Image 1 (cartoon, rainbow over the protein chains, first blue to last red):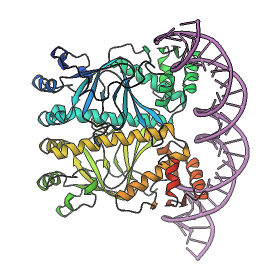
Image 2: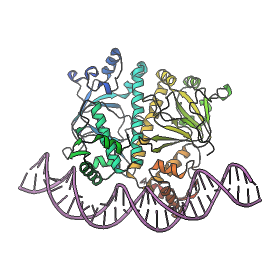
Image 3: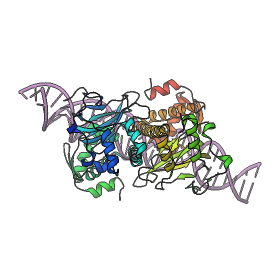
Image 4: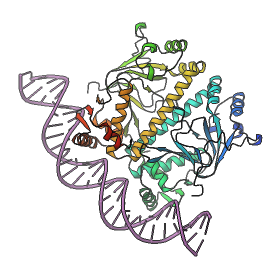
Length: 252
Length: 252
DNA sequence: CGCGCCGTTGATATTATTCAAGACCAGTGG
DNA sequence: CCACTGGTCTTGAATAATATCAACGGCGCG
């Protein structure tokens, strides 16, 4: 592994780039339409930008935060991608989410002021740091921000429910199809190709996310390829037959 | 079934009891320590009570809200218990949660102003209705309430993560053990016995929640009984060997 | 160039599901 | 009061799905 030890556990104190030229500019950020400032008035936007003047950069393999680390901020992915993993009591680890630009991270941490999961960069990534105390303060003055924050948290709950449905009631084949379709949609929403993309995770990480073993994931990729649903070469995926893939998960 | 059709879909408009004597009194509610008003100053508490003057009663089998129904309010369970179920695209249904007094329901609905799941009473139940718009308004003036609301949402996310872990990485045996231990803890937190309780769900509902078939759940109960971990008679459960049960899920 | 991680594939083992039959239990109506 | 009924629960045997174990090829990186 290129980065055996996490380099950057508490970005807000250790490696934050706070040079003025690097300040976040929500107004011009390409992820604005997907991110927290969505729909805010210009004056409110300025206030929000003022409090999230910091960004943090992570190298592949770096941790944004660790399980149990004090919760201080929310993070918005600007560039790159991350996985979040949860730990069971007996030490088993499971990938709980896969996060791309525009996604908010850390929402699970404010329940007891400690992060309940670990966030690891899957590639070199860049994030906005949003000190949560200040977000809460500002939210009291800016109803639109307050409402957006609530919506983000609620959507996270909905997302988790869909994953629970996937893990609890779908067969391996359906799970992988659902995973690929989910990625496809999210890339599309970000202006990327919905049919051709590169997986940022290993087979093992995908399997962990889907409640399967890496061998099963590998076999399924081969099977999908044989059946002409996708073309797979390592981590490069090209979706060939979207309708059949959708049929697999019951979407029409 | 005693209640073939849901009787009460929109409690806030149809069957709400609004007589003054039935007003909620958070101050004297036995679930106060677990519920939204936790830690609020007396004056703030009064404001909160003022806006949740309504309660609603459900009979066993009644729906509190349906999947896709407009989101208008959060609900706090005062008495009884409910299940929430999510629906997959192809019509499969899965129990996503089991809710008892002090729990908040509906947090998944505000992301797109529609409930993403269905809440059904597992027994005759009573809930506080909290119009969300007014909760948001009040939260802007009462930081403690704002923070509590955020904590509740965050904890829901954490809870879902633990369920994902259960569904994705535990064997059937471990899942049922984790389920029983979770119930045990929650009953304990509410002042009930942590070792003896009555399940409000059928084997099928438990199985749905745990990603198992009802026969598997039944077999596991029998197995646990044979092994002296629990005593089961229908829905009555008595936990005999808590340590071994905990060991099963990896808690020490 | 070689090492370590990653991915693939096959053979086998395990786990949970499916199918099937029957017991139990509460509520209902004769 | 008892038989009947529908829903629930239990249990067994056969089956299907996925995991496990194992071997190997490939690729990237030091």
